[in-house]
Amino acid sequence: MKFTEKTLRLFTCVMAALFIAACSRAPQPSTPQPAPDPVAAGERLMRSMSDTLARAKAFSFDTSEQLEVIAPGGEKRVVHFTRKTTVRRPNALFFELHGKDDAPLEIDAYYDGHTVSLNEKASGKWTQTTVPGTLDEMLDDVMKRFGLPVPIGDVVYSSPYDAFIGSTTKGGLVGQETIDGVLCHKLDYADDLVQVRLWLPTAGQPLPRRIELVYKKAPSPLTTQLNFTNWNLDVPVTDSTFAFQRPAGTAPVAFGDF
Image 1 (tube, helix red, strand yellow):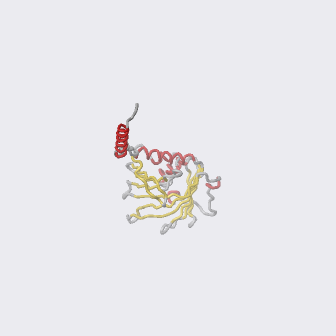
Image 2 (cartoon, one colour):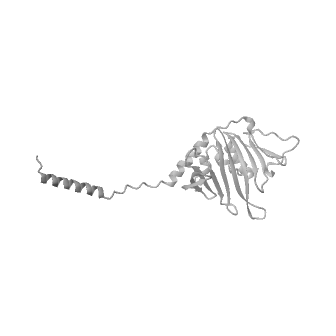
Image 3 (cartoon, one colour):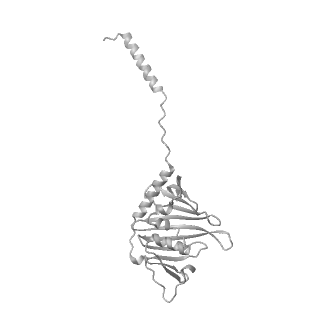
């Protein structure tokens, strides 16, 4: 087929018009991506955190803690302290508790699979009680017998997920916040008794950066905040790490009176 000069000019004009029309057409909007399900996202993050801690056979961490308490006069006070904790699964725990500001606490705690021992170094007062043979059982036992909550206990349990999430707990991922320069996922869970907020880094190991516990059934809701640093998931330990040496020449006080 032969093109005349007129036909070629007409063909060129048509193609140019089609090209200009195609270029000037507004781009079609892409299909919006569905927003992540906060419940499913929270579940994934909590499972990852729990599995990471459960796999660690011996680990340590430091915390800076603030605990709201009801003073004898009925007013709410905040107690500040720091803690250095070492754990060996399934049945050993040691921590040093150091008071700050108006809380002159200097207490060591030992769990060796048979007993829990508390030693107040400043006064020389100490106590000891027999407890069951796993971390989970020990934490439940001291809470039941003495009403002694251990705020770090939720990350020490064999399944931190189950320690945080009960059958009636509701919640999930609620956003992101920066804690001490570290961008974190913020999770929020609650049941009838307690509200739990957790901050897990968006990068690196999914280990708690901050935990807040709000005890809703207290006469006035009380909040405990724990800020975590210096995680070590492969810390070297020996039996002596968790062995309490009784002070010479002193008798123990009753555990419930300590």
